[in-house]
Amino acid sequence: MDLGGLEKAVKAAAEAVSGADDILIVSHIDADGISAAAISAIVCERLNKDYDVLFFSKMGEDAIDAVNNSSRSLVWISDLGSGYLSRLRKDGIVITDHHVPDSSWRKGQTSLGDFNRIVHVNPHDHGYDGSSDLSGAGVTYLVAKSIDPANTDLAYLAIVGACGDMQDSGSGLSGINRAILGDAVSEGNLEIKEDVRLYGRETRPLTGFLQYGSDPEIPGLSNEQEACAAFYARLGIPLKEGRRNRCWTDLSEEERAAATDALLSFVREKDRERLVGETYVLTDFPRGTDRHDAKEFATLLNSCGRYDDAPTGMRICMGDEDAVKASKENRSMHKRNISGAIDHIRKNDLLKVRRYIQYFDAGGDIKDTVLGIVAGMLLNGDGAYRGLPIIAFADSEDGVKVSARAERDMAGRGLDLSEVMKTAASLVGGFGGGHNVAAGATIPEDKKEKFLDIVEDLVSAQVI
Image 1 (cartoon, rainbow, N blue to C red):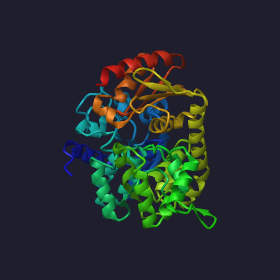
Image 2: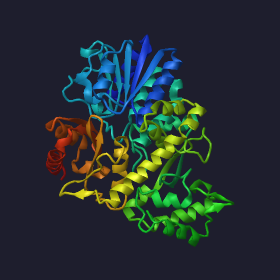
Image 3: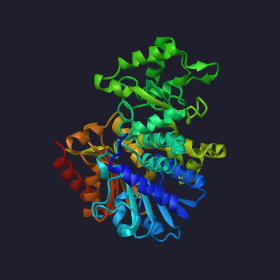
Image 4: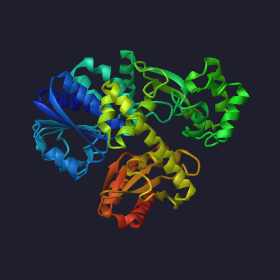
């Protein structure tokens, strides 16, 4: 695949990493950031480089200070950094990110020797969409592959990162992700299979698979446990094998085909491609575990990062089986907090609707690190308006955390939540950024209403 100008930036980053004496890796705490950090760490080990890893939930003052004051000869920032280029002062920085870049940074500064000595590798600078064509882990993987083609065995981690950032939404991965997917298949550690694309194929009991796998929503089944059990009963599909609950991947080919055909009759025509399409099976990991499916692997990593345990997620990516056991409590807590948060919002009617946006304020009742996940699940579930962006608030240590989500087709109508969050936050004394349909901000506690007014004005001006 011809990457054009992106290839030049990738090569410059590869040369910088290869030539560094020692490296500080700085990355985000979500699945994409953890996958990216693991790729970077494995590359450092293979190059026999001394390295440290730091994880941050955002590129705040503590992260910026860690970068600018690092004594390492090179700082490698992954899945973070592009929105703060003008704040980074250290000589010797590589950024492999996919978020919308800082518009105030001087263009052309993409190789060592330029002002600030930053190598910036970002798909947005080269005509690609960082919200769908390439993830942070994907950019990091391209650099790893440029350093040594043998690093193609890390391609599957880039796919996990892309799935964690919902870049497989629709019928599957596209753009540069598609080429990385080809590398993973060629390496033999990933298989592409057409199947029902709801979350939990490997680990959720059959009823929960339909009841909670709400993207897309299945009318009559989503959030309806008894209806889901009756669905299988009509098809003669047992829910248990002995005393053990069966999962979707336990079904025979005949059972799965019958259930898939029946499910397609429940959903709208436009949702059929989202319901059945590509799934990504990680063949190096045991069947029936949350590492055998790329989306479930991503959720496992999220369950670590969102609970201040991103290093355990990175260890899982690096093959540490003890880390898998250590993450068990994180997984349980993650599932409880997300389901509890959604129930809390619905039971208390927190979701409010304006003309151009919808929003909820969770205050201190929802952990701010899962706010974006909850907002996205609400948007794709029952009770929210899928044609309106959703804006979510939760209290955090340094103000109010904001997460904004929208359906991907709204980008085609002109929506850019990254620009909305960045502009609105700056006007109330905060900061923000992200992607066109998934972005965030941090704002002062007393500015929520003013922020919503500005957001609504900006969205109304953007959307056709």
